[in-house]
Image 1 (cartoon, helix red, strand yellow):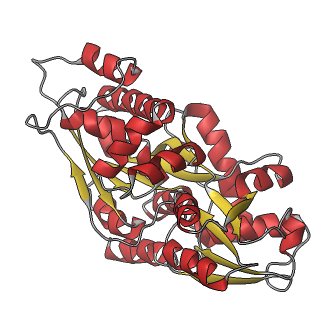
Image 2 (cartoon, rainbow, N blue to C red):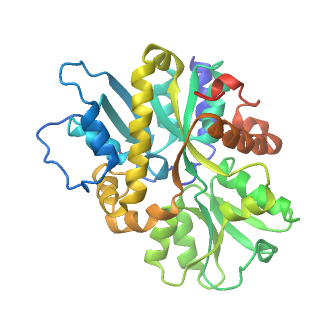
Length: 359
C-alpha cells in the first residue's frame, strides 16, 4: 500500500491540477450542525424539494466521508454540502475540501474517504494502481482552460507559434491539453513555442501583470476571472475547450470526476444512488442560481471572493454526466492522454468495471 500511495503522490506532485489546485493548503468541513441558520435559497430549488420529500426521521442516516478539491470540481457540491449541514439531506454528507489531490489520495487508498472529487486522469491512475478498487460515477467538470493575453495578437491557435506561453500543470492535464491542441494544429510544442510552466496559477497571473503587453498564459477558471479582475488589460484570447473540439471528433475535454470506493458502493447501493441524484440536483442548482451558490463557495472556503465566484461559475463547465454517456466521454478523453503519455492515466486504459452504472 505504501508503494502505491508513493506512486500516485508522485503523479499528482508533478503539478497542481488545472482548476482544482490552490495555493492554500487549508481545509474546510461540511458537517451536520442544527445550530446554523438556514440560508436563503430560492424556493424553486429542485434539490431542496427532493431532499425534503425523501427525508425519513426514523431512519438512521449513513455517513458519507467525501473529499473535494478547491476549484470547479467541488463547486457543484456546495448546495448539497449546505443541505447536509442543515440536516435536510437523505444521508449525512461530511465533506472536506483540500488544496490538492495529493492530500486526498492517501485517505482514499487507506479507506478513510468513501467518495472523492478528483482530476479525471488521476482517477484512472488510482483505478489502475489499486487493481480496480475505485469506480468513477460521474463527470462533474468539462474543460476549464483558457488562453489569456495582455494584448490583441492571439486570434487563433496558429498565432501562438513563436510565442512564450506561461502555464501551470507540467506533467498533467494543462500540459497534455495544450500539447494535443498545438500538435493537431501542426505546431510542435517543443520547438515552435516556448512553454514556461509554473507551480501555481497565482504565479502565472503575476507574470502576466509583470510582463505587460504581449504576455500570454494558459490558466484555468476561476483563476482566469481572478486575473482579469486584477488586470483590466487582460482578455480571453482562446477557449481551449472549443479548440479541443475543433481538432477532436471523438473526444471531449474532461477536467474532474466523482469516484467512490467500490466496496462502499456495493455495501450501500441504494444510498449511493440517492446520493448521486442529490449531487446531480446540487449541480443543477449551482448552475441555475450562481449568486446563491457563490455564497456557499465562499462559505466552504473553495474561493475567498463571492463576486469572483459568481462571475466564474458560468465559465467553469460544471456538469453532471453519468452512465453510458459518462463512459463514452471519459474513455475518449483518456484515450487521447494514453496516446500522449500512458503514465498520465496509470499506464493503461481502465477496464469496463471502472465506469459505475455504464452498460
